[in-house]
Structure formats: structure tokens, C-alpha cells
Amino acid sequence: MNRIDTQTLHPNAQGIAAAVAVLGRGGLVGFPTETVYGLGGDARNGRAVAQIFAAKGRPSFNPLIVHVPDLEAARRFAQFDDTALQLAAAFWPAALTLVLPLVTGHGLSPLVTAGLETVAIRVPAHPLAQQILRAFDGPVAAPSANLSGRISPTKAAHVLADLSGIIDAVVDGGGCPVGLESTIIGGEPPALLRPGGIAVEQIEAIIGPLAKRANQITAPGQLASHYAPDASVRLNANQAHPGEVLLGFGPMQSDLNLSVSGDLIEAAAHLFDHLHRLNALGQPIAVAPIPDKGLGRAINDRLRRAAAPR
Ligand code: TXA
Ligand code: MG
Image (cartoon, rainbow, N blue to C red; front, side):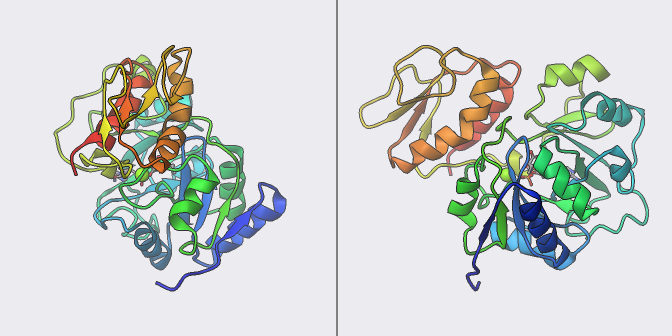
């Protein structure tokens, strides 16, 4: 692929206009959401969507999330039943993605849905994402803005480290407040397809217990090895072995700590940035135990995949 000059855009009216212009001409732009940075392209434009897969080096059977500014826009693409409407009303805009049946005449590139009859759709809350989506006035396909299988980006610098020279631009909106990808709910009855930035307990409080899903890979975040640093990762470590760096949680001696006070929300926001930093040291990474409740479930899900044999 020819290297291109990737522009860093400011989080102001000019930067947003430039990002929208990139989307309009079928280009790719990295932009902040409250979860992680997305790599956006026009979801109706097959060439743009194909370029997302090429830029990430992503296996092409993985469908992408379509981002829209509100429920009204979402309904142009997806059929909402009562449960979906309840979830949208309770959470959107938020770190929640719904997998729903496509409406006829949706106009999305079949590459976005990998030819499925369903679409994953999300209304992000981040003000810059909102402004870009409103100004673009069209559906934006956006996976996380990292090379396939690598640590997700929560800063513009992470996006540039993987994709500089490959994508047109990135809007620098600073750190992502949630720091974990969206929770994905889909199927009939609704099941958890990926734990993420909205805790399962919160969702079950609205719609009752989620179904157990068949064990099939429908999301790349569900591949065993994912979010992988270069070095090996060892979980549930109370201390570092010689040569290891330690990612701590709660009050303890460590090289970096996800949350000294043991706050899972703070830990989620730090997770990928701390993995990026420890990865740069080039040593094996040991990770302290994280409680498996609330956002801890999504954190442990990402850590298990980072630690999986590859
Ligand atoms: O927080 C997020 O969700 C971020 C930001 C950028 O919005 N995006 C993100 O996208 O994590 P990505 O592409 O890394 O993950 C999308 C997930 C994949 O695991 C994919 O397989 C699943 O959504 N997905 C998309 N369409 C689907 C469908 N029709 N059925 C089941 N899973 C689907
Ligand atoms: Mg990803």
C-alpha cells in the first residue's frame, strides 16, 4: 500500500469539518468515542469499508459496528423490537451496541454486515463523535482504530502508532473516558455477545436476565487471542517474577496500577493505555487479579484474550 500523509485534526469546528470531508470522499478517519478510538468510513460506500479492513489487516468475515447520532437515525437501518427500544431509551447515547435485523432498503454496504441479515448499531455519547456523525449525516462504520488483534487505542497517539501513513486523518480528542469497547447485545432472546463499557448488571436491571448464547464466534473480540501486546501476559499475579513488569490493581507495589483505590471504572479507563505503556518496555507482563463483577467482567475478558496462546 502507498503510504499517505496522515493528518492530525484538532477537536474544533475546523477539525470536525475536515473529518467529515474525509468521510464524504470515501476516506478513513480515526475519531474518539467514549469507549475507544474508532476507524471511521462511510458505511454505504463499499470501497471505504473495504479500506477499513485493509488498513486494519482484519479478517474480512468480521462485521463492523455502524455508528449513528441517535435512535431516529438508527431506525433507518435496524428493526427495533420492544426490548431494543427499552435498551435504547435506557442507555443511548452510550457504550452499548445492539445487533438487530436489517430494515429493507437500508443502503449499507454488504461488507459492513459481512452479508448477515443483522446489523450492529451504536449511538456513541462522545461529543466529538456526536458532532462528526451529525455533520456527516450518514452511517459511519467504525471498528477500533488499531491493527487487527492488537491493543485497542484510547488516545490519538495509539491510533497513529498503528495506522500513521495508512489512514487519512485522526481527530485528537484526548483520552477515551470509558476505555473499553461497547457491550454488545443481540439475538432473540437477547444475549451478551461481548462484555464492555456498560456492565451486564445494568442491562439485566432493565430487561431481565440475558440468554446464554451458543458458543460461536460472531465478534472478533470473541477470538481467543486478541488485544495482544508483543510480550506474553500472565494473569492473576500477586507479584512480578524476575524480568516481568507488573500491572497492579488496588493498593500494591507495581510498575503501573489500573486503580490504586480498586475502582473498576477507573481501571477500565486505564486498561489499554497501561498495556500500551508496558508493552513499550518489551518485557513479559504480569497482571494482578481483577474482581469479576461490573466492568471487571469486561476487563477480565480483554485480559484473558491478551494472555491467550497465539
Ligand atoms: O466501542 C466500540 O464498540 C468500538 C467503537 C469504535 O465504537 N468499536 C468496536 O468495533 O469495538 P469492533 O469492530 O472492534 O468490534 C465490533 C464487534 C465485532 O466483534 C463484530 O464481530 C461485532 O461487533 N458485530 C458486528 N456486526 C455484528 C453482527 N451483525 N452480529 C454479531 N456481531 C456483530
Ligand atoms: Mg477491536
